[in-house]
Length: 385
Ligand SMILES: [Zn+2]
Image (cartoon, rainbow, N blue to C red; front, side, top):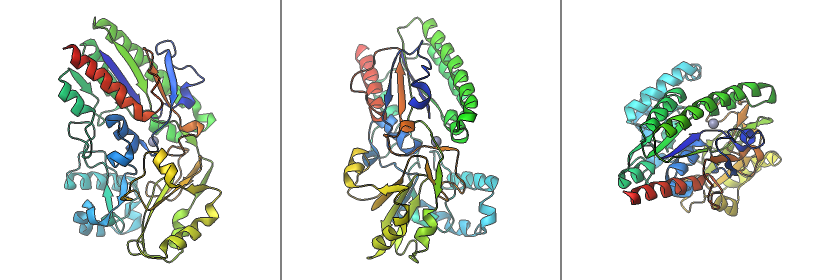
């Protein structure tokens, strides 16, 4: 029985020097994060593919030709008044209504995407990534497990951490061959508690996970089967140092969104599509004052991060802000969060962590290697049958 527990945002910044879970999981190392956000890391963990291959970088993508939101454009126009859009409860309700109407099964939130911009946007997580056939471009973990025909369990992300860990403990007790558990609450907690004075809250949550992990270990032992446990994460959390308003700078050029340029403003990444000659020069000039806050990625960097695509679907150019800086406002939020991820993978707070009861192969360097580790486990169990 092999158990893999993915704790979102359990970065090397909180487990490296503290020795967290070192008594249970002695084989540990830092891992390079997958460039992007959880919406790019999760598909990479579930498929081993990089964003260039699986196509998931930001949740929204400027793609008017493919926008599913055109079907809800008339409905959205009714909700033009910004005061209405900005109410959290209204946006939550609206996100659920749009999701249901468009038949999305994946994680969906409108965030701060406006009614005007939505018809120009595609959304990368239309399907539930965790189920068979969940990823359009590549096979995923659920496909591999089904093919192998071994007993298995994959967490349902609709459920909270408590429930998912309780189910995991029950599955381990029952001796299910392959268990993949996913928890997301530490990520939300760390976004709101990234300063040193708030670290007690993070430590409280870490203690909470530890207690469940100890029970998971006891359950695995009680199954009577040989077992392993590997805990991994996708990134850490970088405290806020500064905000930059790239949007106002771009809009001050007089260029028209959807006619002259297309853009997505993620929390740390500005992705721009140039639609007319001269747009590139104007936007580059508008962002020149922010040269100390970030930089335009070159092709080598994009290739190194696994996000370079010939079709430029992620943007003709990408501007990444420095660790600690947040783009505010963005399509994700109108206010900064105390902590953010999605910076350069080499930033000390960006580092992910992998920890196991068994020695880790030398080739495990980054988040993109976790899938191979899980696939080797699946293949060896399938081969034993
Ligand atoms: Zn997050």
